[in-house]
Image (cartoon, rainbow, N blue to C red; front, side, top):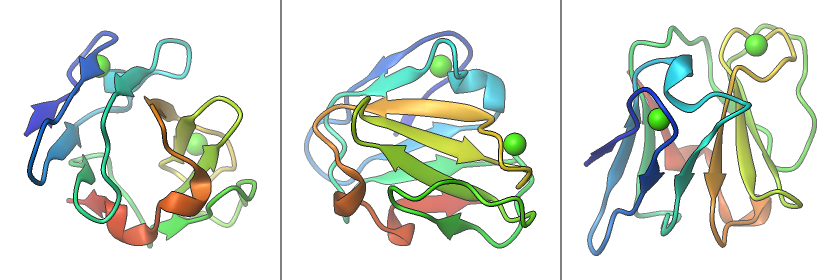
Length: 113
Ligand SMILES: [Ca+2]
Ligand SMILES: [Ca+2]
């Protein structure tokens, strides 16, 4: 398990299933996102705990809605996952994921507690 605490972190999970845990939007801010160097879709997990979520939706490369759902999208150009926790259509945090494209991820790569 890797915990992306406060500040800009570079995380490498290594072999086996890994959980990359974020407990606050401040853990990986838009202006200074954390970086995961070896996320393995379908095996590793982006785990968000205590952020307060509603009916999470994975959008792939599509834009955010303003429907009030917690939602995530991926920008292939910058290899960045953007998360909108409160569903207002504005990203609240971001994580750079090396070697990842939107089409490689699915809703199952995310977990919320
Ligand atoms: Ca961090
Ligand atoms: Ca938001």
